[in-house]
Amino acid sequence: CPQLSEKVNNIASYNFLKKKEIFDNSNITFVHQNEKSLEIGKNIYKNNKHTLVDCSIDTELFNIVKNKSDLKKKYNLENDRKVILSLCGYNSYTKGSWQFDELEKQIDPSILIILVGSGFDRVASKKNRIINFGHINDKKKINELYNVSDVCFSLSREEGVPGIACESLSAGIPFIGFKDVGNLNRMILNGKNGFLIEDFSIKEFAKKFQENFFPNFKIRKDF
Image 1 (tube, rainbow, N blue to C red):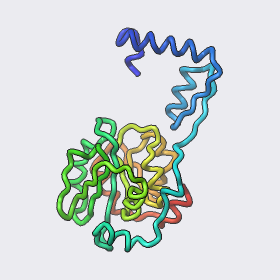
Image 2 (spheres, helix red, strand yellow):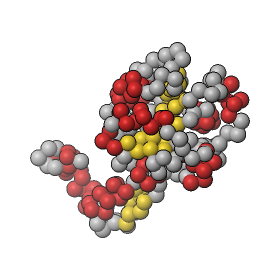
Image 3 (cartoon, rainbow, N blue to C red):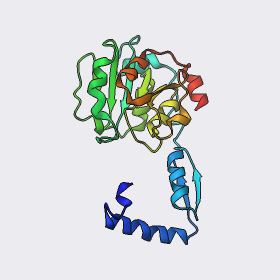
Image 4 (cartoon, helix red, strand yellow):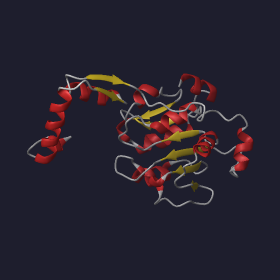
């Protein structure tokens, strides 16, 4: 963080050095959710223990729903129409929802887009094109939305993991995101359980929704 430099922010720098003094003399273990954080932590706090633990989720809750045709009827979705899903908890530059408008222009018009989360509050539902559910607390309903979708995606540029990729893969749904974000490089195998897009290219991102992936049960088993 640039603010840890005394030249930029002497208060942040002071607080950091005080915490480092405490940690250096304490029996503390840092648990990191991605390899970049692990690398930074080991470099800064050399006297402490460090371990990597990927995001853990309830794989019983996020699973494959067998009768997807009935599930699509429940949400008034056409059985043979391709559906893609994105979830964004809040609006910020790093979460990337500001890129959605450009992406939507380049996605095949036949594809239906489902959006979930406060991060998409500014995006209106559009007849036969976008369904915006807004914020949802019900995890069972979120799992159902994974299951009615063919692909899940995130436009996030910075993450710890991200958790929605774990949920999607646990439900057997392929995931598309940007390369080098959180733990995605460890989780996604291009053309098998999803795709990682290089250089934050929206044009390449849009193309990948047409790809074929492993069957749902294989994606879940791999996860």
